[in-house]
Image (cartoon, one colour):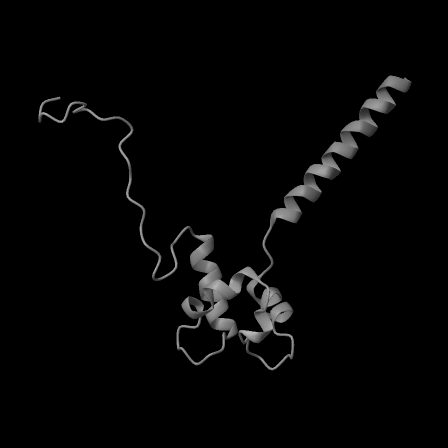
Length: 110
């Protein structure tokens, strides 16, 4: 009986930990992220507000209207593109490498 209780308790702890890990991996919504980044709460994000954050490297790509600020709409669009596996504008596409060379000696024959 003690073994059964211990097993059930272990399963419950593991299930909680797994659930917590999955929640921790989810990105915040664009609205929540915007609210956190907009330090002065003026409805726009400036480079100064992003000091020390990775997103600062992408500021000019996200700021589509080039007005020096990021709006909620611009941040939402950038996050949606990133989440769908689309590359941000200006990113260079990577060339696919063949799984193996069929013409190993490059003589034009396989």
